[in-house]
Length: 262
Figure 1 (cartoon, rainbow, N blue to C red):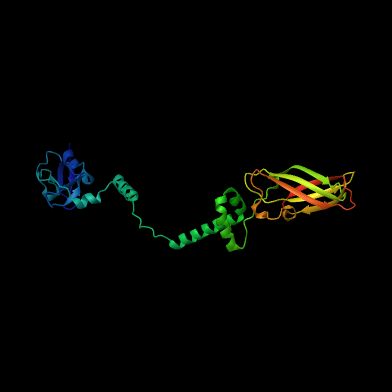
Figure 2 (figure 1 turned 135 degrees about the vertical axis):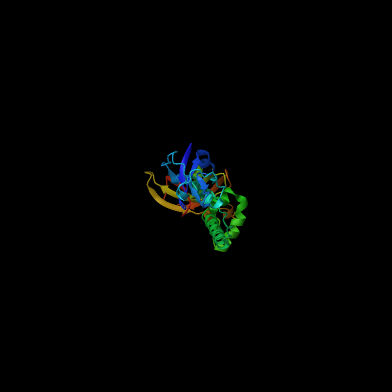
């Protein structure tokens, strides 16, 4: 199909075909003034009658045959970006990965974090030194050295619920009625060594009323040469023997209680 376009500079009119318009997206060069323009934006429907075949000066030259599509012009092509192309360009810029500069090590922060971690470990070792010493015997010497710096000790565990009386007897001396001997067999049920317990003895009368009470510490019942620091071994028995003078109390019964002083 042939149409008429008009040069916006010199007003010369030309015949153009669809093929010429599609070649460069409508861009053509005027054969008269050589100006480049978009022929589609300057199309005219007022094609002159075929009877008027005489040229009327530069105002109307429909038989001008030297209209040629312009070659690719980078400057114009760059200016005529479609909306889709612009959006795609923005997306490409958005997706571009910017390389971040390498981070510098914060040695001050790392040092503070290490000191804080060491402080927490030290506090935990102090608070749970008894449990650590009982569950990990090989660690006890190191805990003892640590406590020597803090002026503390690593005592043996004191679990009263894991130490029990297996048997007991209050025996009177046949030669001296005021002299009695207390025999107590204590069993350590813990899977680790425990401290020696204290023993509370309560003497009662015939009506089971308390008439005397006394507490015996490990120093009172351990034999000469026995070290209280060694404790009662795991799953072992402790034989306690105590001699007492009841004077004129004349007890008829007794009660025993094992405990660890607070």
